[in-house]
Image (cartoon, rainbow over all chains, first blue to last red; front, side, top):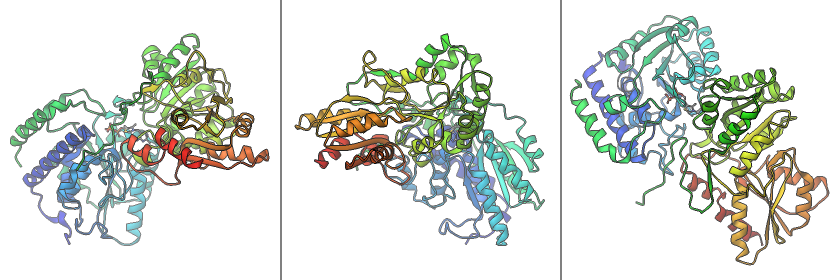
Length: 283
Length: 326
Ligand SMILES: Cc1ncc(C[n+]2csc(CCOP(=O)(O)OP(=O)(O)O)c2C)c(N)n1
């Protein structure tokens, strides 16, 4: 059992290498699928690498371990990134990634909790944080050391349920709960349609110990996760500013849309561009 | 291994195989036409403007359009507030989010006060491969239980255009399912007249009568045409409005055929099939009814043609089902 992994000193270079692998998987899956949510996936690859290869206490060989840290992906449509992370850490075979979105595959476009390693059904947005609070309460009742990490999106902050959960998390003093808020600046209709700023101040005002970081900076992610281990009696929120399409300059620059447009003939060039960019990153 | 079909991205349509005409975004077009002479019409969405065909309205009347963000409860509450100031709000989201998340707001904020709110609900039944979170398989059952709410499941572009205008003239709350994107033309716009609460016989038949709603009417008509070639006379009664329900028309139609079938893009219980059964039983008409609809379970992700075929909603599967009855 991999116990208390996070006591180790993080190897940032190794984590960046994992993030590159996740991006490589994501591009391959998106290419096979014809697109998928490649922008979102590339944007949170760094966070998932930091979680699955550093912060989470989990056992890929035993996903039902009762004292595992939970990672809840509330945005079910980001599944492409979760499948990449679960395959990279050995929960599902790497060879299965090519089935993403295919009829009969368990690697759906949107997450179901029937796939190993998936804690909740994502996709009806706004469901994650409240369920995370229930899990954090339940684990605390059991005296479990496990913590609960909930990814949610900037768009999900527009759902009332998110703030109902935010109030409850602070009320119950859940310091075993970490909200990871992916602020990538986009939602279904394009750029964020309701102004959510100042995001970090909102979470602070709701009683959460809050950090705001560049969500594509591995050192910053690891440092913020470390701070979130603190037993301050408050739930933790990390606001991650991420760049959709991160790692593929052409996609980073493309019109900010819920679906980045990728022409079928473009994939070779994009993958080559990714590999060239990756070479310049230490990891 | 053969290349498998894949779940399509939100907003993408599968290419159609048949020769029917197509209208792009019939709801958005009709709303723009209507709103030119009706300044009280306003449009709202909850971060699904692109995917519910309401962008033509936003472009034509930017100051009468409100995107409230991804917040369906607030979408319906805001629409109710607008209605209380004399506006006629058309509020779009997906059927699942309108009915499941905002049910209380539709029931109380809109229907209880009979406010003039029109809820336009995308991705009805099995028209998306995104699985249980996105497939509105039980929305008609939920909505028809709300007192005073008009519930419409249009079958094609012609009906969507006509119904979009007709519901503005009906004072009170409406829940209308939306077919979006490239929508087929099944009904002749010159010949067909949509009326709230009126079912229409689209095809006469003696052996089997299909009572259908929504996109299943297209499938029923195609199945009837195919079966005619095999000597079977199949009639089709299109029920565009589940509430108020045209029980008289259904009872009359049932009496004119040997076997009765209902067909809906919805779970087979609680929607059209249940309404047909209720109305026949109420009238003491004993007739065996075969209900075509979705099973009592959540449906997986996948490509829409694959899922529709698997769950019996394609024209071919409807024809097979009917042929199997006689
Ligand atoms: C409750 C709910 N309402 C609407 C939708 C439809 N929808 C899917 S993704 C999305 C955009 C949400 O924005 P965000 O989560 O920030 O996603 P991003 O564009 O960054 O992928 C919407 C509105 C949904 N899945 N769930």
